[in-house]
Amino acid sequence: MKFLKILFCGGLVSFLGCAGSGSTAGHNDADDIRARAELAYSELDNVALSSSSSISQDAELPLQTVVDSRFSLVELLQSSTCPDDDLRGVGIAGDASTALVLAQKDIAVQIQSVVVARIEDVRRSDVDANGNELVQSSYEAKTQVLARLQNAQDAKPIATLNAGDKFGVVACMRRADAARPFIQEFNLLQDSLKLAVKLFEEQKHPLVKNDAFRTAQDAFVRLTDIGSVIKGIGAEFDDQSKSMFDSLQQKYSVFRSQYAFYYQLADGKDALVSQLHRSTFERISERYPVRTAKCTSGLLLKLDISPVECSEGSLGINCVSDLYLSGSNCEGEPYFSLQAKVKGAGRYDTKEAKKRLKENVSRGAWFKEWVIELDKWRLK
Image (cartoon, rainbow, N blue to C red; front, side):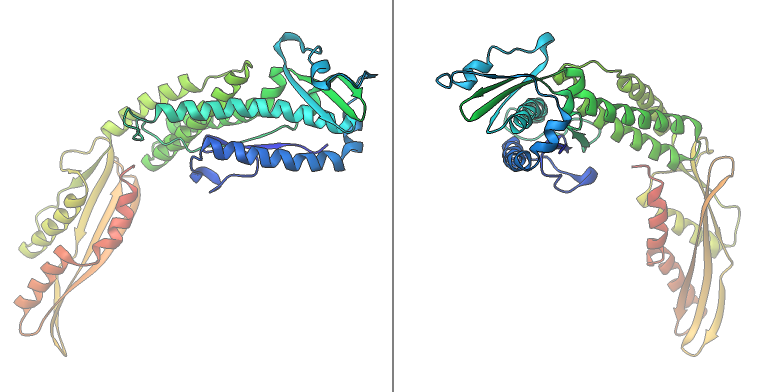
């Protein structure tokens, strides 16, 4: 049987695909969603006509009843109802198999309308009284949920009527069956959330903990969206995501409040090296909040500067010093090490060369490479 694919992208539904696939998919208009749905449904008509033989094998149609063609099939089909508030679909076509596909498609439209309603509710909550978009949450809802009407066979035909050259089919689908693809996706994401929470709690490395929280955060956003769809369909499911994420968020807040950059002050050095230490510290502290207190939880930075060496060259005096920066946890477990060779040239004497050296430590381009590494540890 051919399956109708529903893609839920960035909180929206598309029957053709996700624009900007992956987590970067943007929010589209609900009108665009409906237009895509109609296009996909019109294409499905062709699929139904070309595959009616295989469809008739997948679903056993009830006994056909020949009725007076003077009556509308739509009116006649209204007497066939579904039990227990099941989803009900109606299809009319030139043969019974195609009519069944259209009845299943009718059920898919109802499922899609639940998702579109969810989209519009979210959109209204994100717009203020002046129509301006608001960003109120601490994270961005960028989701991609794949749901297929792969269980279309669960839309059972309960009546097939024939009037003239037209066939009408009424199909019913339990809400639990309609929600099954969403529940399966929800359960997989909830397992991912559990793993991310476990990783956060067990690991001490700050980057690993931060990445684990971001993974959990993304999973929770997607779980919230899928859960809303399942609730809209009216199915029951096991949702532990909010309690898990709320607990994790509290732990993450404590972790972030204690995390900081700590700078270990250098021991006594000669005057020039001490000046280079101060200049390097100033460059770091201008960009990053650095504490000089005793390291308690976070990143400990240690700077070591080699003695300045000066020598004569063909163009004057050259002075060189090597800068070494190491990053570790407060207990000394190493995370990274950086190195930079800084030079200063004097055309006339050593004093001029050392002056150029100090200027290059304060403003030289060597610091750009250090920024690349240090930025990773800001835990955005």
